[in-house]
Length: 440
Image (cartoon, rainbow, N blue to C red; front, side, top):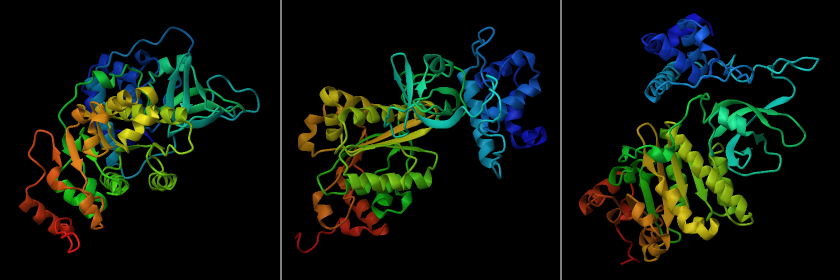
């Protein structure tokens, strides 16, 4: 892509960067991984930031020779604004330019030079799991194998990697384990060479921005969006008796979110699901991280997957994206997590929050309210409660949401009887109100 097209397609980015002084542009260039920014003029730095930040060109390879690279002094606000403008401009483009993306391969008959990518490297992607002495690149669903690539402490420090980061890069292609030698993407974007704020240190804000659960066409969830709307950052606890439509709710809600918010990251912790239900969900959402079905799996392996997926959801939120985590159920998850199960469940469930740029929303299923004490503090941490009804499920309506008993914290119940009747009739699920003759 030539400079003329860059200036045309990314004019707002060019205008913003051109309005900064050369020192601020150099700091931003360092954050995007441009080597030796002090030796380049301003317009070259601006084009480089756009190329790397928009994924048009791969990041420059980092050399371990010579003096240590100067730390990036770019402010978080400047970085966020540049990334926002890049995303907006990329979405408006009529097509994606792919010619220069990914690794640039240089095949040689002799031994390749250290800076060249050759036969010895392959592309790989997965979740980072940190351990003593380094880290490992696990599968995108958190599962592990002996052949998972090793990630050295130097690479972790260089790219500021954290547990749960979804990383793509180049791995030495050996018969055994191999090692991640170059990072090309982190959580779907270009790696930034700057310290990131930690999820737990970012201020939590009140939930805002309605999640369109009914966008997939499910009539009950369309009514749900009108009567009991859930917003980004909500911690929703769902009290559901057996056979009241838990699986149907997860599938339909995920369908709606995927249809209306394709950029949102859907994550699933479903240890209570059966093997065939897990298979169906993975086929429905092949790119989503799923830890499901405790049957026949080693507890340690499932615990690892649960931890990595929960951490990945945090990384998405702190990186400015929207993540939605489904848990079915808290009781099953506590059993999987072992001795500290209740504490682990509380930590995962309580991580739901809206940040200034991103959000993590949690939907967690729980037993009947009579067993609520077994959940520990999770019930107190919830800021929305949804209740399913066995009587409504008996009429063949699933998910069997009882709207009159569902509410968002610090508000009145979702609906009064008259509003409920009108909305359900308009959405075509009026039978949720009227019992059958056998019920009478």
